[in-house]
Image: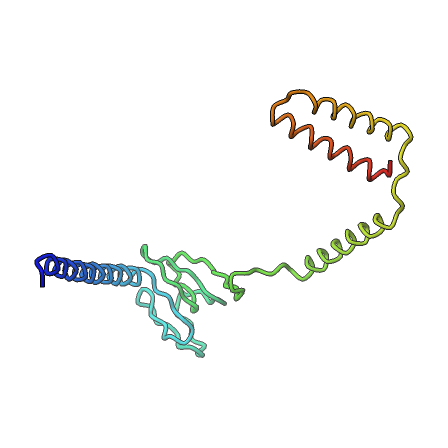
Length: 189
């Protein structure tokens, strides 16, 4: 084994060991951060045993007992007790700031109301019907003065295009000529 190969092998082992050490420290830091978050915010999932807030007794699921001073709630409540945030489906103590949380099982997509959905469908059908009627109507009869004016405009555009112009001006003239020709075709000139 040559000196360079041995040095490369030692360097590679050092890099791998350093990467593993950094990854381990990162995992420890994120675990500490998660435990700090979980200490300040308690999330009660359905089926998990409720935890008492501020030492008040908490009713067992299915029982009719309500903690003294606690508000009965339907759904999830966000309670702020002594600067700590607690989420509960059992209500909040009387001395806590309470906010009801509405949960929607929409997988991130909120559906429109049924009434507005029917209104949207009706307006879309009305627009489609109006477009179909306008397509069935005969094309507008060209006015006698418009066709000669369009032909004269094309001649003037052609004359300007034959003169020395910048590339931008030539492009603008070409675009305008195309628009005038399209209008002629629409009017059947």
